[in-house]
Image (tube, rainbow, N blue to C red; front, side, top):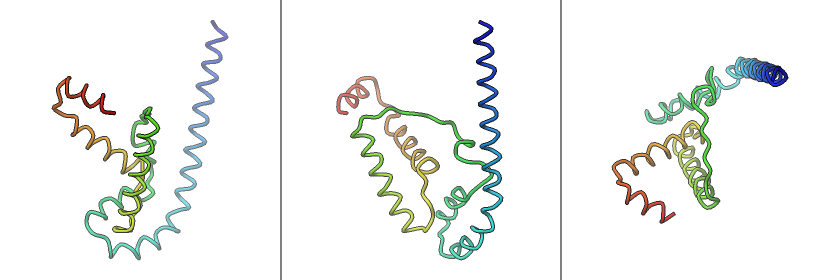
Length: 137
């Protein structure tokens, strides 16, 4: 059992070191990026609508990544559902970025929309309605 504990301690130490080196690398990359992005973002600010400005603030490189801001959640989808999700994301991304000239990120923007509006579509259903919807998939 002490061998397992040693493996657990060394594994946790390795994970801690990996996280630290990843954080160090991301901080180094972020300190180099602002000089490059500040010139391009200033020129495009005048054409943005208020809605796009709100989204662009979350799209800008920030001190934290999506992984640091949110909780990772994994789903298992049927292949057809995965294709539908990818197709819809690509269509919305193209339309949004063309219209507002702002990046539309899958994890930061698209997935929260899918979950929020999916939850609203399921809110208030009774058990038989849930069963009917599951059978229709």
